[in-house]
Amino acid sequence: MVSCVTTRGDRWAVRLAWTVALGSLGLMAASLVLLVLDWKAIDSPITAQFSYFIGAAITGVLGLLITARRPRNPIGWLLLAIAVSDTVYVFADFVAIRGLLAGVSASGWVEWPATVFNNSAGLGFLLLLFIVLFFPTGRLPGSRWRVAAWVVVAGAALSLIQGTTQPAPTQLSPRLPSVPNPLAVPAIAGPTGNSLPAVILYVLMFALPLVAVVVRFRRSRDVERRQLRWFASIAAVTLGLVLASFPAGQALWGTSPPSRWACCFQLRLASRS
Image (cartoon, rainbow, N blue to C red):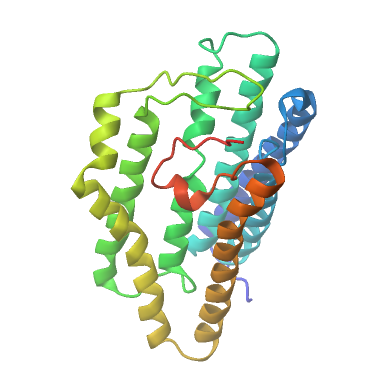
C-alpha cells in the first residue's frame, strides 16, 4: 500500500491516530492489571473478557496501519474507534468489579462504570456496520447511499438510547450482586425497542450495509473484487464463530457468551455467564 501522507493535515491525523492507539494500549494494560486484582470475581473466559482483549488488539493494529498510510480513509479511523470502544468496555467492567470487591455498595459510584460497560458492549458492532458500508474504497457505493448511512446512524442512536435507559440491572459477574442502572427510564426504553418503527429501523440498519456489499461487488473489478471476496470470507467465518460460540459456551461454561450481533438490539447486554 502506498503512503498518502502528503499534507500537514495528514501528518497531524497520523499523530492523532498514534495517540488514540497508544491510549487504547494504555487502557488495555490497565485492564490487565485490574483483571489480576479482580480475579476472585472471574469465573470463565467470558467474564475475563478475553475476546474483547483480542478484538481491541487486532482492530487497533489494523486501524493504525491503515490510518498511518491513508489518513483520509474512514476505515482506519473506524477500526481505531472499535479498539477504543473495546478497551473502554473492558476497563469500565473491571473498575466496577474492583469497586464491588472492595466493599462499595452496588448502588454507589460503581453504577457509573457499570453503566459505561453495559452500554459500550455493542458499539464495536455498530461501528462495524459503517466499515461494511465503506469497505474497501473508503467511500459509499454512490451518492444515493448517503440515505443508507443516515439510516445506520439513526438505528445506532436509537439502540444507544434504548440501552442507556433500560431498567434491567447490570450483572458484572455471577459472583457479585447486580448493579442498578442510574439512567433507567422505562417509559423511553420500552417504546424505543419494541415499537414497529423501531423494529423496521433495526432491520434496515442491518440489511442496507449487506445490500451495499452486494452492489459494490457487482460493480467491482480486479483488486477491489478480490478484496470484497476476502472481506466476505472473513465475515462468514466470523459469523460462524459467533453462532458456534453459543452452544460452545453452554457446553464449556454453562452459559452462552455475549455477542455483538445481539448487542445492537439490546445494548444492555453485559458479559453474562
